[in-house]
Image 1 (spheres, rainbow, N blue to C red):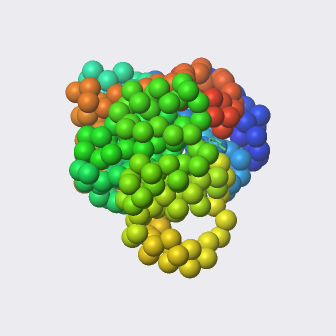
Image 2: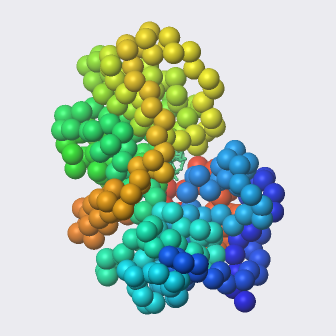
Image 3: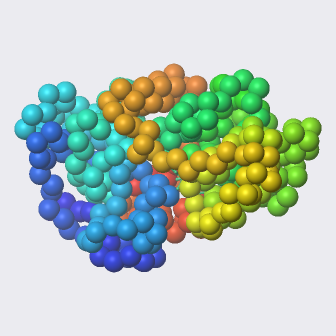
Length: 321
Ligand code: NDP
């Protein structure tokens, strides 16, 4: 018998139970993945808590890396024994998960399962945020919130690669050191961050703000922008942002506001391949460092959620079946 994490209702981390589960059977075009490591992402907590609606019983997790155990009818690109990762898997908090062949990413041989599971969702997110949502160029001044988080540490490194000046916010000294090690030029605490960004940019403000914190930072993020700057709101770790009067964008300096999500940035095989190839290649050659900040056995998924939501994690959080 295999195991999975199952939620039978929305709620706190305690709804995540470790249960016996049938091994899934791959349908046409699907791979059965023996999960080596599953990625924990903030979106898993939104689905667990009911912020995002899901059907029950619900097995969380869309990110994993491991070995193909079986292939469904019509699969042509993979055979049992291949190593794959995905950001778009089905029920990944489990010993075995299903992956549509089109959404399976080949793993470079020298990346271990934990590193390969750490990259697809947060790495491709960082990629679309700086290459598609707002095209960052050398000299742009960029504010990234939660710089020591999973997305944050990857964003800082990719932004520095592009020659941007990076300001970031964190909540503790330990996180400050991690953000500096990743290459951030300025590391701030959240209190008064917009004023500090304005000082750092000689009064002008940031070209772009990447805000995955949401409710607590949103207004300050708008205030930290230059005239015609862009706020990229891409998450809500502190809670959802209340409705906004569009006049706020006028008053702030003809600002742009966008709320992107990864699903619209992996539209086809070519786009998925572009983002994943660049991210995996950077990790494989060592120019993109992946920090696995916390690793839990699958049975402790609830604790992983508690720690992620409690701001106690840094970098990537991994579950190991
Ligand atoms: P992180 O590892 O960044 O964890 C969240 C961090 O947010 C915390 O560590 C904490 O850092 C900071 N934070 C600030 N305020 C709070 C609060 N009140 N409660 C909890 N955390 C807070 O998570 P991820 O890298 O997985 O995700 C980061 C954000 O990116 C999330 O909002 C997520 O939803 C979003 N995301 C969006 C995607 C998209 O497609 N739009 C895809 C992937 C992620 P500190 O203590 O330093 O403040």
